[in-house]
Image 1 (spheres, one colour):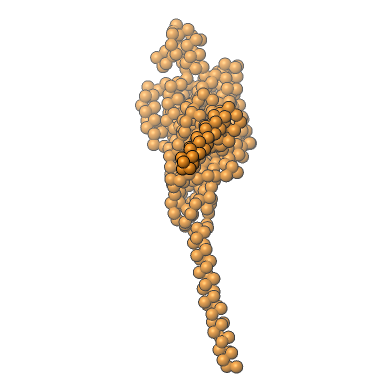
Image 2: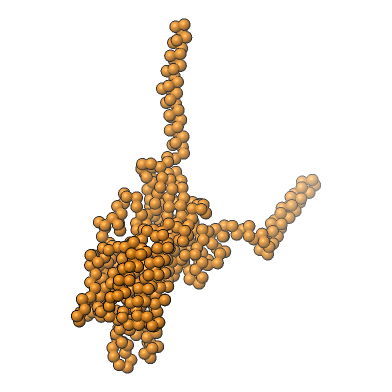
Length: 443
């Protein structure tokens, strides 16, 4: 009877405990205590408002090789949305690190957003269309050349304010013909990088007094610029692996208001695309300066957005000087992970160049102390970026701890310390003790 009563008491107590827990959980979903369970969810961004609105995060990338300074490792992370635009407004809670297959926590102070991160070294080539149509006015009443120059000036100012260690060159391009000498692009023209700021401004002021007259040839100048930056012997663009210098950002901005009308256009385009496929360090952004195909469709009463076949004179045709090859410009940018933009007004061109700037400098920075930092050891790290749309995971990146300098693991340092103390005791204290004993015997 006593045993039965005891079992009954235990059963009742257990039921009450389960009922209490159930009521507590139920109550939490209708009370402020839910916030206590949100800690981990907030860490991975599950309950946060999507930082990209309706557009999800498409990919995350660790840019270059993680840098190592003694035990400190720093990774730079670029995040893009579905349209290849940089995502600039993420929080520390959106990021997580995995080092050598194990999650690694990092401190808030060791995470920096793109505005606070140290800007990377950058080499920027701006290819500026100098065809005759650049003398015409844009939709806002400004000549396209002046509109382009004003936009690049704003880009230069914003770049200078970012304290970026960037170099920039403005290179006009265009084919000669009809009494126009044109603006051929060679390595000589490309090897004139300027410090951002006043020197770039002066170069733009000089170009503003020139009169464009060339024919449009997009592909050859761009190919020349890509090959120039891809010169592996030039340590400005490609530091030696043992130099401990990060890979600079290499970017080309192509600004054009036309299209390549050469009979060899298909061949030129395919040659360029083949070249771009083999260059992973160079990003090409394209900016078409003119009306979109949809705007041209409405302006000229067409039944479809125009293509090259719709260029001509007469009803159902569009003037040659108004057609900008959006399709080809978009494919060029997409092949390199760049951004393709389109605008018919100077102020919009300036806004779109700001997007290019974000793409250039839009990198998050995360630092952490390497666990067990043995000299010469190799490690791997990858980053995950969490949002309500899902998780974007970067490819793992390897890095090696320095062979010389830096701290040894704690256990190793303790072992060395004790060994030194023991050696001093044997080499110093023990002989002195023996000598003291001999003196006592002699007395």
